[in-house]
Image (cartoon, rainbow, N blue to C red):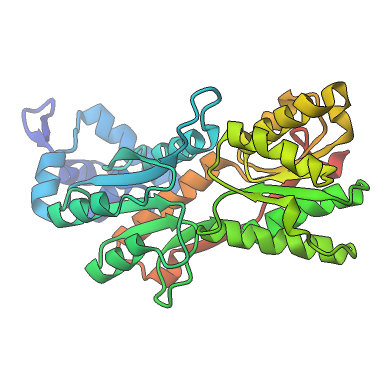
Length: 345
């Protein structure tokens, strides 16, 4: 709410504008998110607002705009209790960091892996409980996306679909990431590279399979279906799968994330003991976990916090009216070995 200044008058954005000799629009943008305002002006406006004792009346803003000033993130979390899902945590941290300093609050809704939470999404839209949604783990023909497009409700997905209608999304180039990590293992001399990944119903898994098989064929190797394991993302399942893949002749593993890598490594150690070092490992990573294990590990890396920040940024653009085609971004991973950029080694 507007506060009373030293002279007894109410401190409003107009007060700050008069103090600095700028427009009320400039003040509003500087206090909101700095859009179209220089960094120096943002700093001046916010310093003046603090000095004069201005406090934004969010309840009044909600009434004037009809907005909730709430963004909701439906994020899939594994039920893994022993290790946890650092990737989803990093994603949420990035989302919160981007919304910090805006009028928006973020509500995270944990969703069990494999549950699209379509009914919950419908409830949010019908109850107008948020101004926009962030969704992950997209399917090829995602029912949540279809519903949100029909409802003309702002949203952004972490991942792409195969729907004909364009929609906002941020995604990591999963096909490239899988090619990159598989190629690294093949260049190290491995020839029986196994893949441990998620369910094929998800878009990113289909993309990763294409990249994995492309790398194999580029090295003159025909993909062997016996060397692929698709399941829920769970360390214990990956651990059990590793034994079967070793029986099929696997000499290396390309894993979808940190959970499956740690599980696969444990499964190899169960079978081979100290000889685990003879087996190659690669993963798509959003953290630096590979820096803390003794095994040589290739990681196709893109920060999960940065992914979360980009998702939040695209959602804000969409809420502000940007067309879906302007709210799409594809990022590529960089190759690391045990946490260090590959190029420096």
